[in-house]
Amino acid sequence: MALSQLQCLDDNNVNQRTHEAKPEFFYCENQRLALEVLLRDGRDAFRGFLEARQLRGFLSDSELEAITRAVEPYDPGSDVLHLRPAGDVKAGDDPAPLSLQYWPDLSDTSVPQLDLGWPDCASYRGVTRATVHTQPPQDDQAHIKEIVRKTIAHAQKVIAVVMDLFTDVDIFRDLLEAGYKRKVSVYILLERSTLPQFLSMCDQAKMHLGHLKKRL
Image (cartoon, rainbow, N blue to C red; front, top):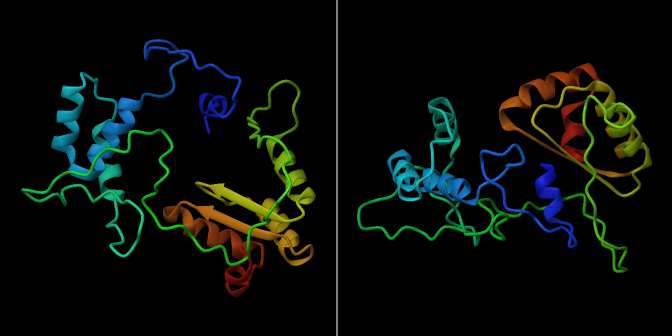
């Protein structure tokens, strides 16, 4: 998550408006809405949206191809709002309204059922914070791998890991120990296209796939 997004979580933070020509510029709401149009109506509608809003093209041809190729059909049995695949809009159809919010309350996928549970906390413990670590470290911080492993070692109830590509055997073995020896619920969310690399790493860690289904 970008620093600008983290700052939005702080009630005391006042976000200053900035222009795309400035180095402080990270995010444009009109660009996000343009992506919704691309996913819902296809490339021609996307280009029309850019022209109507007087936006410059911010995606290369290869990026447009990758995004439209990755779109999947929505689940018609779900109660949540879905974006239709690009090109799936028929003549006479009324286009669905754009979400008009940065973090939409409605998702394009159903809420997953967490079989291992998620800890409930009835008492208020203050504002939830997110900490950003970088590699190389800044301000004399520890190596990011050391921070991750120490965080896993201190976890007592649940661990949630989100990665594009997960191939670190040491961190994975730490998760196994937390799940099996300390009975900590462990969830791992990965990019689907990198799953073969993850499973190859599981073999190196001598992890049985049946155990993977049970615990992770």
